[in-house]
Image 1: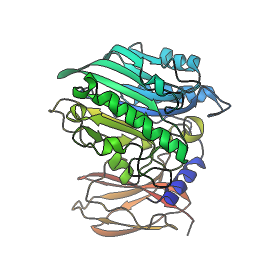
Image 2: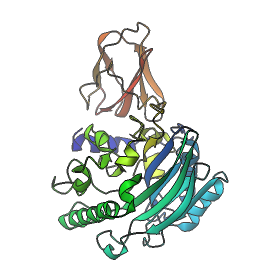
Image 3: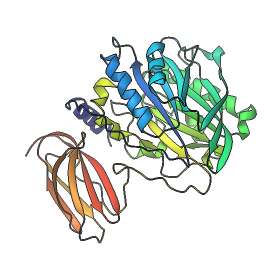
Image 4: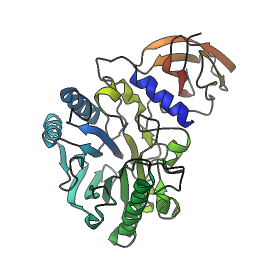
Length: 386
């Protein structure tokens, strides 16, 4: 997906009307450790972020309680009282804490204490305050208890320096190097470690003039680290409203050994939650699941399942006429066009081979194909009615 297309998708989402009911899909399972990173735009600070704090707080409560994620590394928490309101509204087994050294935009954690028991937490690399934009990483060590295994895991949560200028890129580059050194040259070198947060940059190439990614020190060490979000970025996905992939999860090789393949995802379905971008955050959460070797798959919601039996629709963007290739054998297969609120716009039988659909209206829609083989869902931006 080109940068232009990403921005077009983002603009189409912002212009959509408000939905009145949260529609949350449960992603996590009892058998896995389900982790997520989420920048909750200026949470609790209506003059900088979403204008209605009450709605933002309720949307966050709905998402955290309904998604099945066990631990959230959160960024940009501007109001500790509002953060505490979320904790109070969640079931009693939810716990959380915020950084003590993050300026006005705090980082922190929300976690399910039935799965994770906090061992210790601390800021690290505080002497490199400039490189981390006044937000030094928040490290937390947990005992993790799953039905079939138990282990100790360390999380390093960051909110890196923003902006696409040279100085900001240099600061992110140095900050990433310091995090890697902290892992490589301490006892963490042989432990499951999750380095995650708002990286404010991409992995394939930097948002600054397509320079080398600030996180190349991790990328160029594949024996020790796995860039779990890299395939999503490379396939055209985005986590930030403008169309960039800024929120990432990097796992040490010890953590990667427990990674459930196919579980890394951007929670794109959350755009159905009460006009998400306008009322909750300009970032979408990014998550991944981990468990014992016996866990090989997790049930995926229909917008994330992409069987090889269905091609990507073309052209995209489209002026209203879209074609896709169905290579399955199910004579009962059906295509459905839905908007980002989940409303069905049109539907019809899918034939083997090429299928051409006419879509009325403009904006972002999803073409879903339902068949015995599974479900495929692909986004299409419609630029003008035919």
